[in-house]
Image 1 (tube, rainbow, N blue to C red):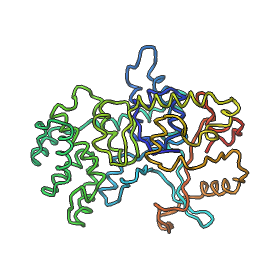
Image 2: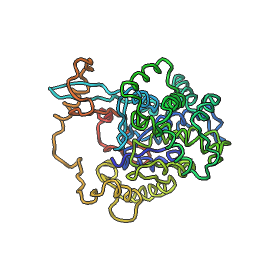
Image 3: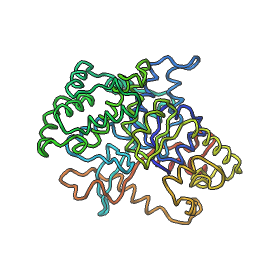
Image 4: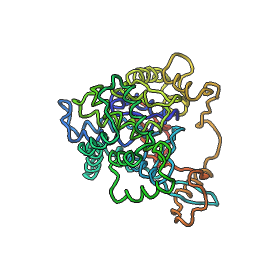
Length: 418
């Protein structure tokens, strides 16, 4: 498990199955909703000759990061929560999850995350098993991303004096977007712009405004930082379009830019998309990095070849037994990425868990009790949900994927689910 890394569909699609195993193994991947939207969109597209749409989606789903992938909460839901006065973690790269169940067992507190519906879907999709509700769900997300009231948007732009047509560079477009979002004059017009872009349900408008009024209408950048981030991306995109810095001829740009909504929730962003290569670095913190997809793919190919040279008996023990960290010898991009985010990782000695004599039965028993505990009622929660004693995440992991055993070959089938 390595640096928290956001990825886009173009990158995962470029990998073969073996390369995807190493990407999943050496990175803690942020699976954002835009990835699901793009993947399911292929069901309604005419794809490459000789392959059906369902086969195309199955091809991508087969490479889904099932071992260390975590589904990010949908940005609109996070924005609504932020507008209601709740904080959204943005400075640590933490992945905000949804659907956790607050529980207590043996006097200890915990949050239990069952296998997410998205992860379950990918487990079916690589077998070409699709549900109609999933097609409709993705369609709704695409509509929310692509549908804007351009007339009302233009009116709000004029009220705020926004004219991006004079911008000559993407840097200028970003600076203008930041100045608009962080401005202190005309606060209601700026809030209205955010609500318009985010498609906030009308029935929530009054609640949001009342909550905002309690703290005397501070600027968005102070009141709801994550909303300010998303709005800055949206304004940047519209300004760049108006200035012909981003092509309006490529409809997918509207969806692609939405990946940037999730930049606060990662340490690195990897993409093979040229729009991302041009725009993402403008919105990354100093402690984050953009990784060009083709370069990482090439490195994963090298890593795959390195480990394929191991004896078969060694490989059958599972990748976690012999590759607890990237290669320390040689020049590997993955190792350099770890150097940047985990400066001391090379000094740590790898412990092969498969060779330890630790009895895990007690730990497994505690995990099962926590997982089986009923959800607490709101009035029963007597601990800080952000700091529980334990967090349990349930995953469905295939024993073998491509050429690699993700868990030991001799592991009993009953223990495959974790």
